Image (tube, rainbow, N blue to C red):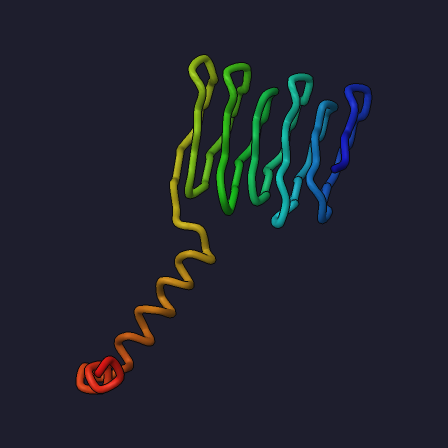
Length: 131
């Protein structure tokens, strides 16, 4: 797990392939599509964020897109849109933006694949296979 400390300021795009805690300032875009990102209590983010899981304890200004979940803790502030299949907003948190709770792309694809394979097998064939 990587950490961006309180005194660090990053301007530009940030990407990687490990979990990240941000307690400093980031302006730009953050892309960690396979990992969790935590905006710590001192974190100040002015960026769109894409990650598997996003936890906001500090402040964000920008859209949050998570493939699994977004959690905004009591001290967290989100100024932007949230897109995630699961969302938890603690009492005291501030969220100003639209919320879209979509299914995760993997779950939707699996469901589509299983529907397609069931639809492609004639009912008579299913009965013979189970007999």
